[in-house]
Image 1 (tube, one colour):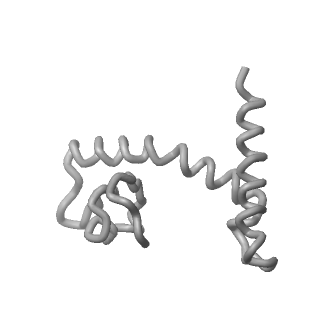
Image 2: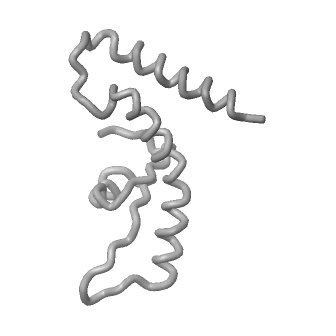
Length: 99
């Protein structure tokens, strides 16, 4: 995975080693059996979760179309086109909900 240094990567606990590969990435702190989290670490984890939740909701909406949640069996050349169409539908839906 190659990310530009200017891109901020907000990851979950599954990507703990990403900080060694990308300098501008953030993962939550983990507690262990003998080392519980400090109040500062808990606050940082909560802040990171608040920032990540927006992206998680978008991913959930895109998975409803099943292009991301299942194996893609069509032509690879058309994946980008179909994904862009689904993203456009989602963006249009967002704009319709705004009062």
